[in-house]
Every structure is written in structure tokens, then in C-alpha cells.
Amino acid sequence: MSGLATDGPMVECRGVTKSYAKGDREITPLQALDLEVPSGDFLALMGPSGSGKTTLLNLIAGIDRPTSGSLKVGGVELSTLSRAALADWRNAHVGYVFQLYNLVPVLTAYENVELPLLLRPVSRAERHRRVEAALHLAGIADRHDHFPRQLSGGQEQRVAIARAIVTDPSIIVADEPTGDLDEASAGAVMRLLVDLCDTLRKTLVMVTHDVRCAAHAKRTLHLEKGRLVGEATRHAEGR
Image (cartoon, rainbow, N blue to C red):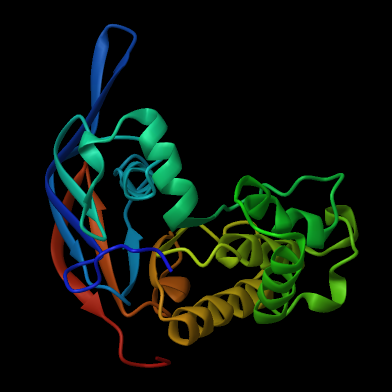
């Protein structure tokens, strides 16, 4: 749907560095990082706290911009976009799955999923069709009229995933999507993400600390002190 280029890598980082000031110190969570993520890949990013995983995810998602280097997503050079243009690009092309769901407590599951579509010139009938389809794909359609407080953690995350896919994004990013879930719920959420990646043919980049969750991805890369270290771990089982 997006108009992004699909004949090259979905994500292409070349010499990406991110720095920011903290008091009188300069913090550099990413240093001259090179990375390619092919279209349709499911990549897990692992590493210790402070290794730059979430910083990289937020750059790929257009939430922030690199200090230097080139960052292309779907052929679009994000590093040159203004903040307003970056926000427009993000709304059009990125689905974000958060660890703590970020659902609006006074809205039903249906209304939470509908929210991103209210920012677009989409008719009410088309919004309804898309929301119903996203809830069905996420396996949560039978809870469409429930408020977040009436849902389990696993169900809340399913609603959050439905919200992330309702706009038919070009890329899905997930920051510790199972970090607040028990083992059974985490496994169910990971199987859902794998199914969605395969069914919708989406590119998915996920940050996780859990090797069991990372094993669901097609490959895993490790970051330490802002740099990729070692070779990618490729996963054959369960894919």
C-alpha cells in the first residue's frame, strides 16, 4: 500500500551514529553502525541494557533521527527529513508494538485499533472494515467491545498488534513485545507475530532480551555498546 521501494533492502543503515547530551556529557548509544534488513525479514535485536537496541529501533521507526550517517527505509532517506515530514512518514509506513501496550484505557479494543485510521482520510465504512480485519487477524475479535482493564496482558498485546497492522504498514517494529507477559502468553504473541509476518509479508524488526522469543525470528543480531558484534544467528526451526 505504501509506495515504498521493495526491490532493495527494507532497511539500510550506513555509518549511522546517534549521540545526545546528558548533562555535560555526550552519550553515543550507536556508533557508525551498518545494517541491512531485507524486505520480508523478521529480525530480532538482542544485547545488554544500554547497547543501543531501542535507539536503533526508534531510528528505523522514524521516532528519532540519526546524528550522522545514512538511514533508508524502503528507499526513503530518513536522515534528511524534517521532524514534521518524519512524523508524516511514520504515520503512513510504520506499525509500532510496545512492551506495555500503550492502549487508551477509556477506549474499547475496537476504538483503540481504530485510532490510527482517524488521522487518515478514510471513510467510516472503510475504517470499520479495516478494524474488523485487524482484530480478526490478531485473534481478538471476540473482545472488540472490551476495555483494556477487562483484558488479560496477552489480550491487550493482541489489541496493540491489531492497532499496529490496521494501517497496513510497510514495516512493523516491536520493542520487547513479550516483556510484560507470562511464558504461555509470550509464546502465543510470538506465534501471532510470526503468522502475521508470513501472512501479510511484512518486514518485522523486534528488540528482545529473551532468547526463546528471538528463536521465532528468521535471524538474530547482537549489539554491544552501539555496535553489531558477531555473525547473525539464523533460525531454521519453527519458520
